[in-house]
Length: 408
Ligand SMILES: Cc1cc2nc3c(=O)[nH]c(=O)nc-3n(C[C@H](O)[C@H](O)[C@H](O)COP(=O)(O)OP(=O)(O)OC[C@H]3O[C@@H](n4cnc5c(N)ncnc54)[C@H](O)[C@@H]3O)c2cc1C
Image 1: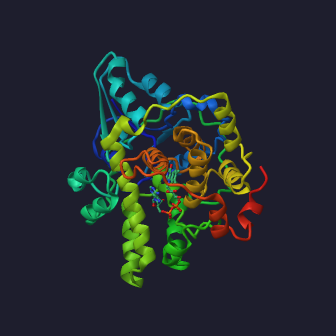
Image 2: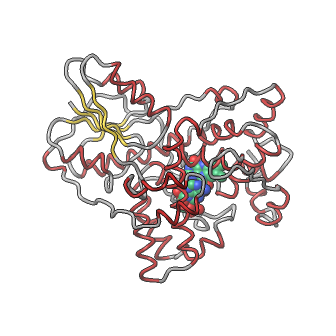
């Protein structure tokens, strides 16, 4: 018996685990269900909006439709993987669990222990997540663990071409009886989420509007998807292949010329890769033990989450995060710096709040960026402090962003 569990890689093409599952004959259950993190820090945080689960569902339903066109069945459940998968493992036959391999410390630990819970052998195979370069291509990176620029030049080699072939003819994925997700899936998303959303989005961003050509100048804006690429939700849910995105940017450069903006976007994809690579190298060391909060700190944290600080800019950022599940990179940096350096709170609480709220939550990028701002990251031991008033003058001089997001 084989089960393919998709948590994040919610796309048809360039998806090694799905390709393998569909290539190898024999019964298989294709299953999409989310991973539910459990963080002790959550007890100090307000309840999450639940938007990220809706986004996940949208991407999963989209993949289900695409697989249905190939005559294959994707079973979807909102029950957390930790509860559902042990129940599905057959008690009387051995099992192979295939899954994507996005690095997440808790998930990795759970997968390691899972075979001990089953009466008959259960083996687990983790296959390629959404990475720009293969492990072979990053082998020499260890020397540059604390230096992104050195790492970037070392790794600046062509990513492998995305795999486009799927051979679903030989197998028939099984349908199983699961509770159909009752959660509604909102339709009015501002940004692309699913694989089908990304096809027109890439077309527009790279070719019709060519917004990529001013990315370097516009990426720090607070408002206006298109000023930044809007690729992160797809990269994190795996509804967009990073190697496909890379190829498309290169195709744009070949036809219309490379400029500092197209290069800057590629550079950011390497930052993502660097954070992912580092998370695997550092494992538990990235998630240092979180200090306890005093009652005063707990109250400051609540006020920050609930947009009740004395800074209108921070409040606007937090409102946008709660209502949409997305904020720009500059907004993330400012509000993170405020939590760590102005309020003096441990960065891990902010990271868990982002983890619960962001549609594009990605363990390595989130924890990596928070630690980086706090100055607790191997890539930077120096605190990165953002002056709120100066940032506001520079990036929201007419208070347009603040006005748009001043209310909860
Ligand atoms: C405190 C903090 C927390 C963050 N948490 C996350 C997270 O959970 N998930 C996430 O995907 N990004 C995270 N980022 C990185 C970055 O803010 C987002 O990737 C970006 O804002 C997403 O919008 P975009 O796709 O339009 O980005 P663009 O600016 O258009 O960049 C294109 C892509 O490059 C990658 N990228 C860009 N900047 C970074 C960066 N600093 N670190 C890693 N990758 C980067 C992303 O994959 C992004 O989609 C965080 C940054 C900070 C400061």
